[in-house]
Length: 193
Image (cartoon, rainbow, N blue to C red; front, side, top):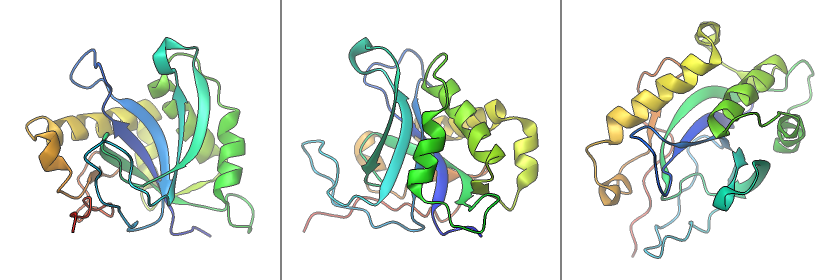
């Protein structure tokens, strides 16, 4: 039985991108319509932590390593998401929790970079039955095509919008075909009172 938690591919800005679609890729699991905090001008993440990020990181050109951590659903660097589906219990009747997802994704090898790791992580999640989708045919196109569809969508939506403006808008979201989801379930940062 699926939960209400959404499973996304998340597309983040990089400090020094090599090209226009040079994103940091991750798996993001968050509740439906998560509460979003107030944007902090210092760049600090909002204090409302209700989501989990799973990704391959190589901070300061260190060797790649797996990381999972609790985060806010919306951060200043997050440009957009591709919704893969909802978190599912897999082949068991027990609801899957984020700890089980973490144990599963720890086993995904980091062979090239965060993008390839996300593609392999999607394959692992789908094989384990941890993603419930109403459009399973989207997965037949192949996971690299899905990740690229999201990358193209995020690029098309954000390329002409200033970063400050993005913060006042709901997060751009698409499905596994790259079609926009409206309204987005991840809203804008809350205005400072």
